[in-house]
Image (cartoon, rainbow, N blue to C red; front, side, top):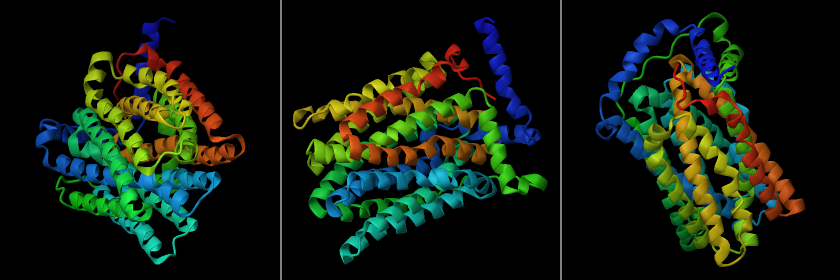
Length: 447
């Protein structure tokens, strides 16, 4: 079979899951509603700017906690390598436990309101850590509970968020919107660790988490001020009212899609090995490289420059080289750049960690901007929640497994060797998309 024949067959297959979808008759109405906001520049789109601003503040707070929470475990509670690995696993375990049922729930719910309640819940949970430290009652058990419960709310928020964005901005603006959100997320990761490192030095690791609690409050307020009407969830009847049937419907769409299933498999494997590195990175910086908290903050902040660059160029690069290539070409480089991190030694060579994370962030933002926009585009509106839930369950469900394994392997074999093997495994994940029909396309086909 020629390449052209493969591409034509591929495009025809991509259409099949959508044609079989029972809500097909509603798509003209949905599409018209989605195109209207696209006529307005996102810079003049009031509600998108509110969402964007609130998420920027929230991302800064979360970046502070991403740095300070494991530091609370290491510096305040003197956790072992295995215990730090469990803490990392707890923060991602929610995707494995609740992502699938969360999809149908999000599809049935008012996504805008659900996001506000998730922000308020996370505000209360994160605030409990500095309160526990101030009263002398803080324990590792509390950190595990907060990490898991916050993770559950983050699952619902993330699924609702990705399902709500096409309603807010329209399909034609999704790549631009995701690029802008990715850019400021990287900006938050630039500012957050620096701020976190400074706060840890000034007030201690536990008190620094107050920043995150405040950021969730601001995000909830920005969501409250959004006025774009949200369409009522499509009522379900008969078998589809059964939660299990709806979960299977979302999984069937993902697994049955010839391109999406390859992208999801590649990301899931990459996340598994990446979470091994994530579980060990703070132990590596503190106990192997003997880096001070402010140095750790600068290293993590410096790496976010890469994500900022990736977000700024994602839209133009996708138009220049093609959206399909923007998925698999950056992924080819992912594992090799990760090898720079375990090469670092105490002293000035710690900069290798910053360089490695910087390159990983450039690649990660380019990859995620393209693949997230793609799956938002191809999925029927009524299935967005279930599709996003299924994707996140598979992609993120591997992370707690990798984090827990990283803690065990790091304890018995050493942090540096395990991080090296994890980087090689991360590179192998790209084989799913390289050896797929995606490699033969310039742009990903739309539904």
